[in-house]
Length: 247
Ligand SMILES: [Zn+2]
Image 1 (cartoon, rainbow, N blue to C red):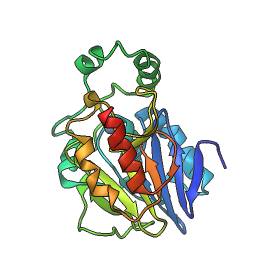
Image 2: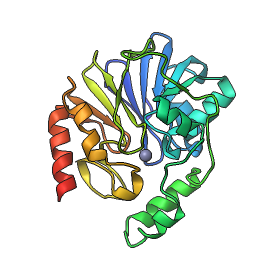
Image 3: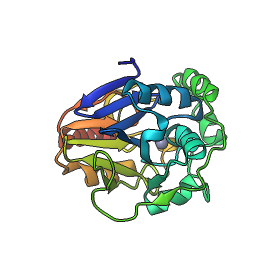
Image 4: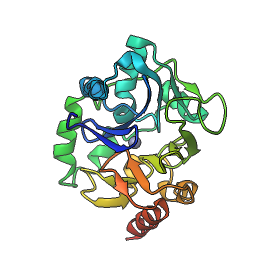
């Protein structure tokens, strides 16, 4: 299997883009994709599908944790090229369609240029389209609540904080939770390894309060938007992230 995709549980795979992850849930021939990297990660995304023996046409749906460019870039291309449906929280779907934008802009980045870690990161992500204006006009809200009728049977969990419609996905069958950017285990800009929330300029709300929505889930595998998969009870990972935010 290619290095940019790891099987983290039965039929659950973590794919790596440029400083960002996506998750693939395989069920027979079909796949659910959760998040999709930067626009320039589209080649890596297709390679990760091929590594599972699947093609872009096999993706039944793309679920987004939120509408930041590093999570929706590859999804915009799949949706355009293959007509793949894209679903997320109702509030976030408007963000995916770019009816509004909640994302760190040039001024936020300028105010953070004192961070020595920001420069090399910015260089990498600009090369894969971080400043591009991607949007997905066809993005829709989930049709119903509870487990989705898709490969992997993911259950959306509203975690409004990082963005105002951010969604985590619980995978009860394998005891995992896809935390998106509400809780990460590593990020080039923070330079921290371990469960934590992102610095304020990346968030439109308060990610720390949103952690309450995931901490009681039955899960001992954390699959974050940034950083490595972490084998630890979610309640412990949340406690550590809260602790880190207080420091
Ligand atoms: Zn984000």
